[in-house]
Image: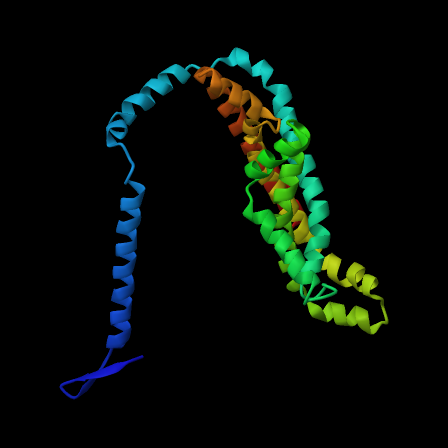
Length: 271
C-alpha cells in the first residue's frame, strides 16, 4: 500500500495519486456513458403517451378483472401441450447435449485442436439464440405445431446443459481417473467408472433445473405458432379479451410455481 509522509510521520493511503485519478476517470466515463445511453433511449420517446400511462394501466386492469373463469376449461389441453413441449424438449436437448459436452471438455475430448472448438461452437450457437427465435425459424421450416416447439426447446437446451456439463467434467477429481487408468482400464471403462459417477449428480440437477426453465419458455412459443398455451394467449390478445388473458396469466403462474417446487424437491433429493 502507498505510504506518504506528513510532518515526518508516515501516513497510509489506500491508493497512489495516479491510481486515484484513474478511478475518478473511470467513474466519470461511466457517468458519461450512462447519460449518453439515456439520451439514446429517450430520443424517440413520446412523453405525451407516457404521461397518461397510469390511466391506461388502470383502464386495462379494469377490463381484465374479474377473470373469466369459464374460459378455464379451454386451457387444460393447451397447458398439457405446454408441459409436453417442455418435457420432451428437455429430454431431446439433454440427449444431444451429453456427447457435445464430452467433446467440449478438455480432459475427455478426442481432439483439443479440432473437435473441441466445434463442440464449443455448437454450445455457443445454442445459447446465443433464444427459444422464441428457434421456434420462429422452425415454424417457417417444418410448419406450426408442437413439433416445432419441442425442437426449439431442445436446441436451446443444448447450450445450457452442454456448458454446465462440460465444466463439471473438467472439474472432476483426476485422482480417480488415474486410479482407474492404472488398473489397465480402457478409455470407455475410465469414462464409466471414473468420470460419469462424479458428474452424474450435477448432471441430474442441471437437467431438472433446465426443465423448470423450459416450462416457462414454452408458455410463449405459441405466440409464433409453436403450440401450447401461447396459442390461446395469442388468440385472446388478438381479440383484446383481457379477462381471458388474466385467466391465462393465473394458470401460467400456478404452473411455474408448481414446476419450481417440483424442481427444488428433485434437486434436493438428488444432490
